[in-house]
Every structure is written in C-alpha cells, then in structure tokens.
Length: 84
Image (cartoon, rainbow, N blue to C red; front, side, top):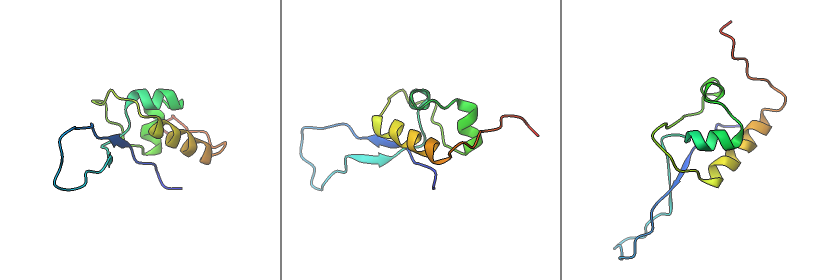
C-alpha cells in the first residue's frame, strides 16, 4: 500500500471566485496531533517514511483515519527503532 498523504482543508471564504475553488489540498505532512491520535510516535513516522509537518497545529479526522488504515495495513509488522 502506498504511503498516505496529508490533506489540508481550505478556509471558507464568503466572496465569490471567478473559478471553482477546491476544498482540499495536499499538505506538506501530518501534524503531531494527527500522529498522536493515530497512535504513531514521531520516531515511528520517520521510520515508516511518513512526512511530518511540525508547524501544523490542526487535526483533520480524514488524516487520522488514513494513518490508522495505513497502520493496520502494515499488519503485525513491528517498527524496529534500533539502529542495527
């Protein structure tokens, strides 16, 4: 399974655009709160190759769900934190 990408919701503006505005965009990485809610530590995320954006403070449930699904797809595979 491919690594999940973080989704960031755009703010809602009440003026009109001349073009259709997309509601979501691909983010730079997952926030620390999203990792915490999914039960993944920062070291595990780095070992798994997940991108982490430490500047983001928001928590989007879609991202938490995709992280949980990705973690389940890994199965019983334990993430080894040793350097060997």
